[in-house]
Length: 251
Image (tube, rainbow, N blue to C red; front, side, top):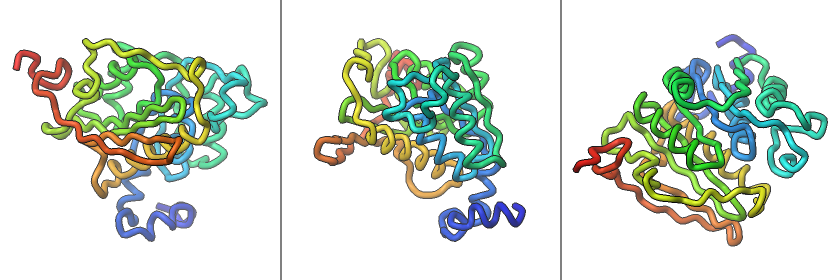
């Protein structure tokens, strides 16, 4: 690191858990963020500020006026702009030294696998089960840690699924793809603005912990946030030996 970087990241370097070596790990890391909306905005902002060397943002959508109540990477002047392009501008203003890949596309199939395979950590900040399952499958196949978050109305949840650990469950162990789950959209059910900020910031924190690395991740645990009463519940998640994604489906 040069003198400017030592100064920029000095508050991280002062932490025994990070130090110079940990910060260098962050600068050398590549994080893939799926979704540049409510969760992706705070997550990407903190990852950029923290000095993750390369961020790839994937989103096929454009900024809408209704997004601005919670999607803090965007501004009124950018309504109609691709979300990834808008987020890229915000991230570059915070930290012009890192590389930001703005991918205005819907990553799926071979393209999704290509992006996941080139990443050190993946953040799923999407809003539908189809994308979550596709991202999870790619992360399991390429053994890339996945930080998954979700929020709607006044409820949020977050967990880590680390395929590098043979005992760690995957997203499909918790939500089997063969079962039907109803997608709940913010556009019809509403969303409390700070809730996505809380969950998104926690996704960034879990990603940073995995990259440095330090502490214990949320692998094997699902945190549930009740925003009405600001209370947390923890559910332990066990790996499903018969999981159709990470296990033996015939077990």
